Image 1 (cartoon, helix red, strand yellow):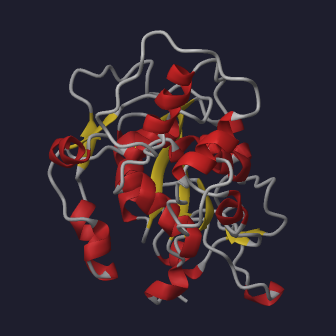
Image 2: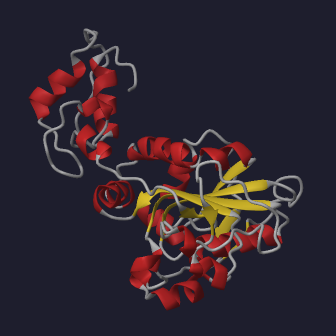
Length: 297
């Protein structure tokens, strides 16, 4: 939580969390706030609701989502597919050998005791070396992402990024930089920000805006699974004027996005980065639609 020394600091935080309406002026000279009373004061005066469950926030200054909702997010746990991050069937005989046994270089996965590839990644060899996510795009996690993405609750990016750091610690340790998946300029102008970049800024690595979306595409969620790959095929390219060396060539890149559905967007970005000389491309997202819902298992 940010340090609060005056009512001006307090009101600024409330604006950031969207707990106060616009139009309230902040006095130039205000008295200091005694330590420890800010949350109690605002909880009593505003009864601000949680952005997910609508319960009154006990600690509104810690964010617009209550601690109960944050604690209820269930992560995807091993065994997971090394390439896309999908959960794998837990029967050992159903695991598909990892890429080392398929004649490729070994892929260490320190967070997954059982390493393998799902059936979908064996059928369609991905351009992404490894992918991680917080959890399934459902329930509270979906609602938190919606609050960030569609309600403009940009302060949620910091807490989501903390969960992403925990789930993707191995990728962050190996990557040289993070590259947020870009929005088309029209969509970013309409929304006012790129949620992927908001997340990327809190991951502790240099943020490189290396890619642009060359054409406007339909939202992936609007399309059937078999049309999503065609929707984003060739949609990304290196930013014009961006030098290929030393920024991309030989660099290990970690792609960042809020949600992965079929992985088609990340795949298209990865191919563009590989085409510009990136040595390895990983992916880290806040949530993923697991493949069994799309008929991959």
